[in-house]
Image (cartoon, rainbow, N blue to C red):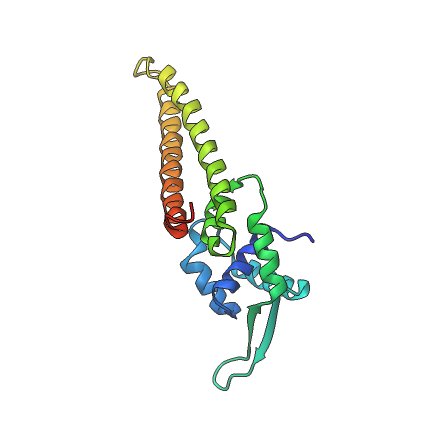
Length: 187
């Protein structure tokens, strides 16, 4: 199987709320577009792929006032594939507006809380390492003459440190959600 993360984004959206391609596109626009944008053409391509894989089932729905539509829902095989993908350890992919850790957290209700905690720990550790590395760079650049052109490099490094700190704070918030979910007797 050669499914991309975007395939699982669409599958996860279907798991949250079955619907037509239009409905799923609207859901994506209200939610995952902030950390994993999916174009309409990608979404419709992925819906067809999910049907081919047997991970989603589409049903034709006739409409009187509008064009007919196809309504999709996940299959048991699709839910199994989604859970398996969510629980798998993968490099924490981050490209422009795509963060796999945030995506997997968004779909966290469908994965093992222990695996989500493990993946958050890896994400936090990477952010802490980046913060430490760039803090060293910033400390070096702090001694520069204010007219030195490298001061803009310091500003860029500081931006990345702030992002890393935001990631660290966010992982702590999600871990608190997981801790509250498990309750005091389950720990």
